[in-house]
Length: 124
Image (cartoon, rainbow, N blue to C red; front, side, top):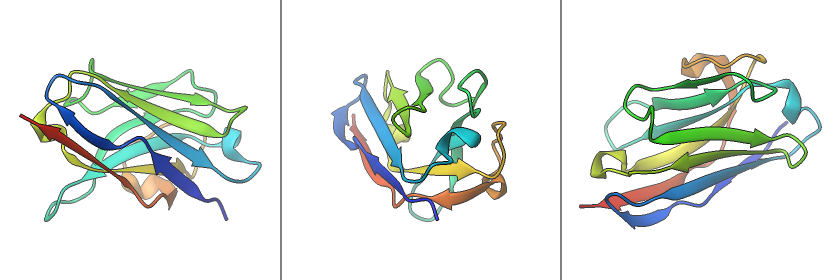
């Protein structure tokens, strides 16, 4: 079973940047799409971004497109989320997830393994 460990969260002022990392265990990391989701208290988990197995195809939520960039390094079993021009409404717990297939998708049901999450707080 794959284990996903997120890091890089923290407190940042509006307009600032953070880079999240997600390290995955196991030998099959490069076979699957990876994604990032976020969740705030009382709300459903929200899709942020996803990337294909080879990094050539990406999908973004409209709310983050142009500000966030997802990437992956299959040699390091790691996926990243570069977050720029952060806004207070980006405050959430961010989760890394491994897809059930190779191509990216925005639906949570297409992801089978999840990390524990990392808190991102953007102050105004």
